[in-house]
Length: 538
Image 1 (cartoon, one colour):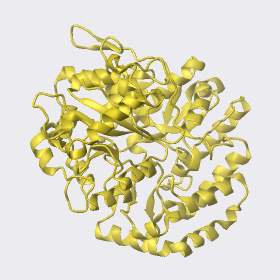
Image 2 (cartoon, one colour):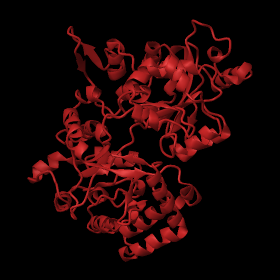
Image 3 (cartoon, helix red, strand yellow):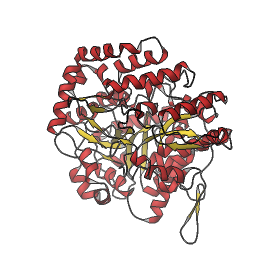
Image 4 (cartoon, one colour):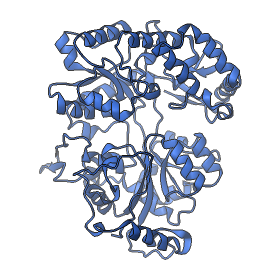
């Protein structure tokens, strides 16, 4: 296998802590940065500017294809590796898939901004993970010809992709010109997030799973009285904190119809005032971590793993993993998934429906051998049982053994960060990503998470309208509804929660939003809804 350059890390402050589980390629040991730069410089002078000889116009028919790929570094094990390209699990994946990956990591936090910088500079890998084609960054890149349309390539080199990926997903991956520009995973169920609660604490205190908003409040009070440090915990900018927004049907990242039939951000609805009043009550009474507005994902997860948290929001599929981390410190503890509180006003409630796909990838318009990338993705859906077992469970003998009847004995390491995640989660880019049934069934709490996903979660989805590329939002970004970008709302809501802004100023906040260009935003969003441009999520 061709030697690789050291992985390029597009990240600010990304900790590259040495981890015992991250192996190195024997042939790479002792390779210096100077040698790596020399290799890259020499390759860049080759015809076409490709960094890999196999990707040049003189590619040998029998050569292992080199795939230069940029991926989101959202996996804690991956982030801990000094060079993910030298990890033993990546090597095993490459050998089984018949490719040589040259991985560039793009930090998860601020992913869209960092991706946008790469695209603006024109220096990005042959294939790169990105946001949906209709988002501002990606649609702009498509219109500027940075990515190639994939329709013909998929027809010729992607039989498994075309047969197994639902047409609704392909529709999501089309650009403004109607062509398919991305390849990604697909969701069999659009339920995504839920609240998890410490079942061991409920049992210890003689409490039932909460159902109503009052039940939730009473549970949090009981947790506090029992000495739980953080009865409820959130993350920065109200991310993964929507339990009580969900109760009122006003998850801030959604658009809803108001009584006049206009499409408006949910955070402008009158029910949002009630929801903010509840969050302020939790804050005033010490029922929510006072650092919830600044906790990043790592800090929150550390607090939860230490046993200091009673309730939080996670992705349903991640719930068993949080159990593993928690049990390292509190062996008898247990997280369980619960539905959002019933709306106290009798209206709709639930967690925002997820898109039919999210983990999507684009091919650089300058890529000389895009067919190798399509074949790489297509192979991930190859029905070969041995390959699917590998893609699902990873390295045989390390994570699982196979019985004579073909059944699997899975043994997932109870460590964090977990090397098991590298192949099925980080490297397997195309799959039914709704929930990983095979893996979760072998994990403590996994079968329960699957049951919740198939039953209660499916009935706890908040429908909403999703306008696409609103020009008025581009002109007034502080009015955004997108998570992480809701500047005006987050500024107001944060101040309300901590008590530096009066809840009575809610109407004033709404008026300010309108005065800054919100009237135009609502008019444009409503027009998209009426003409069918906006997407309906449910």
